[in-house]
Length: 148
Image 1: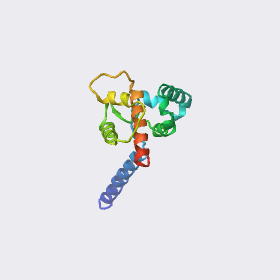
Image 2: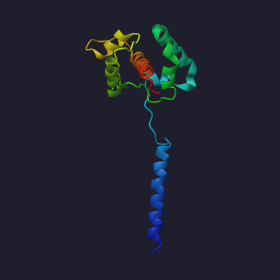
Image 3: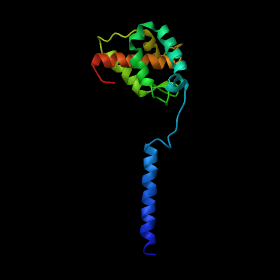
Image 4: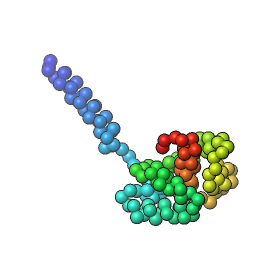
């Protein structure tokens, strides 16, 4: 009985430690998928290239941000950056507010970005809206000389 208690404690602690290390290594991670996750799946580069090219064709003034924007999504498996479900998240709102306060920040398609935060309905897809906000983020970070 004297050896049973320490053995139980050691086994319990080792199980606990291994559980935490597995969680940290992503073995028990859950992946949420969305349309943008499919767009930026690195293993399917043909599809992601085609969709990103379509976006940057429609918003040609943002082509200078393309490589930086695509690097934000490169290994992202959770989908959108600036959305929680169907609404812009607090980080997207904070980015927009900070960018609006930067008087000398000139961002192409500012009207489309403003429409995302106005009460009027926008015709943008979630993917386009997310990529527009990512472009805003890159422009803001470059203006403020942040490392992203």
